[in-house]
Amino acid sequence: MLRKLSVLAAAASTLAAGLVLPTPARAAPLGGVQLSATSGSIDAAPVFASATTSAPCPAGFGRNAQLRVGPPGGPYSNLARPLTAGGYDRQPVTATPNRSFATALGGAPVDGEWWVVVECVSDTQGVHPERFITPITVSGRQWRAGRPAGAPPATPRAAGAPLVVPGSTGAAGAPPVGPPPAAAPAADAPTPASAGPETGVARRLTGNGGVGGASVANIWWILALLGALALVGTAWLTTRRGKPGGTRR
Image 1 (cartoon, rainbow, N blue to C red):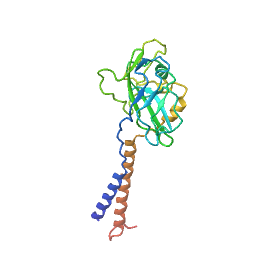
Image 2 (cartoon, helix red, strand yellow):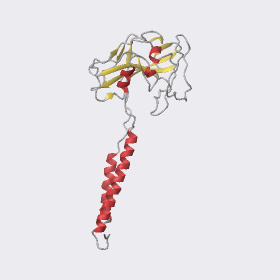
Image 3 (cartoon, rainbow, N blue to C red):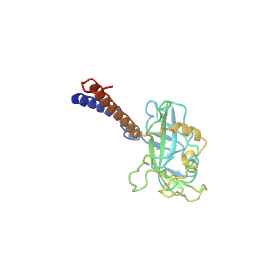
Image 4 (spheres, rainbow, N blue to C red):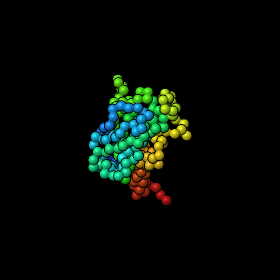
């Protein structure tokens, strides 16, 4: 009897282990974005003439593409209308901005590091988890290509961490203003990603689920463990009923 229970328990444990879903590791960026200018004004419209990725989008993610800007790790705002012609996984993506840096964000950005990114989109799988990335540095009303001098490696915003959304006075020539680093934005406060006439398209292209892989793995583990206990209990009761002196009705 004990031997049977041990075999059943081992089989149940193996089944439960197979149901655990590992959290995928973060991949490397897809490449860089070549800008047509190496510096300029945050108020110049467009911010630069064009931007081209260092390679095509990954296979299967060439239906749409987006040229955007934002702090390391996001959120990002559109610098150009979303590209919808398709075929962006067959050749490098070239986008033409139609607005200034300040207009894309809804106001003047704070000083420091920002990322110009290109996102690749699939009809069936949504936005690719990684982007083409090129850092730029903002100082006052000017930007230049590259990271701030002496800056440590950029750390994208961790999942679940409060967004630090760049603020602005909204007036050209005014100094940039930002919220306290530890403060989360108010529930009704607009974010940079909501600026511009393509708000609906951008939200559709960048939507994703809110359940993490680790949470799903925990749920499956609990369900598998409960199933294993039920299986062992049923086997024990069945064996007891089949023996003299066992459970009588």
